[in-house]
Length: 169
Image (cartoon, rainbow, N blue to C red):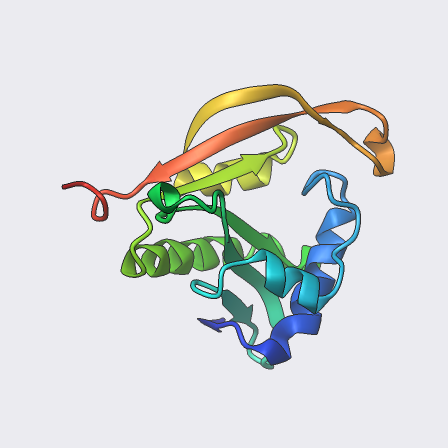
């Protein structure tokens, strides 16, 4: 497995992995992955990574989204890590998360956060393994618009990882 910076040519694979992950009903309130332009416009240009298998196929991706446009929060970002559902359990998510954390600190981010459905125990465990703490449970945070939980109000765990290197002065 190789981790490298995401390139525009990875766009179709990135959106495909996202779209297939959404079908589980436990990845996001969003129903469809959209287009590469949607993805590209919704994520920061820094700290975008893909995992490649030995054949050079994209098997996962990681990126950051801004949590606010206010300058005081320029070093705070929301993480996204998605692994091809057929490739889960191989350590890909952990390698992507480590690259994301290292890259975020190199780019001056002091706080990373994630919103995860409590039922997505694999994602919660991945984040906890990499130093994220559960800050709270947002009860009934949003209503699911698709899948087996369509129409149900879903809780979301808010997790945060505070850098021990950046923003500590």
